[in-house]
Length: 207
Ligand SMILES: Cc1cc2nc3c(=O)[nH]c(=O)nc-3n(C[C@H](O)[C@H](O)[C@H](O)COP(=O)(O)O)c2cc1C
Image (cartoon, rainbow, N blue to C red; front, side, top):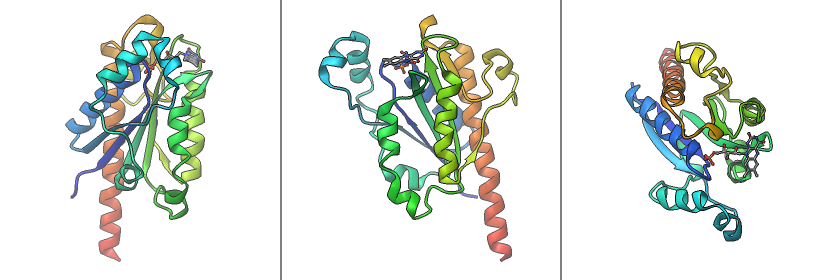
């Protein structure tokens, strides 16, 4: 069977979500997927970016990551979205990309894919779940198959968020637990998408 195509589409201002996205890419590749790691375009004005040295630094550090296009979504069997929490919601940079998907949605090209999401916030109760659930609203509209990590692996009892890998950036860069959780989430998404792909191929052949 053809490997699963996984797009990891993320926004990161200061690198935490970028680290989770890279860990997810590792997990997905190990699970046998073709992976496209894609950032969304930065939309913030230079004065906002320049006010935070870590922000500008991360833009330089991630210059080699390709900016996402609609073709990445059309290509994918599964999509993992990553975003920082912004006042309890996904970042506007990621939302702006999502708001360009109307043509794909209208053609039914976002339906039946596997979707899942991960996040970072500054504090433990800073809105990780609300951010992930807000993204899931869109997955429902797309007719997506939402695959959360739940407690389906021992790492989830350490990382503790069944809605999606979540990192508390106020405590420092993502450590081993968050990285392992992101790898697991990606593997779970790939394995679920692979089962669906195989099942659909079999039922297509059976007519
Ligand atoms: C405009 C803005 C709003 C934010 N809102 C929240 C919030 O509601 N809760 C929280 O814990 N952190 C909040 N943060 C902190 C970010 O979530 C945190 O810096 C981010 O997760 C780090 O991820 P990154 O390094 O990938 O950019 C906010 C940051 C900004 C700039």
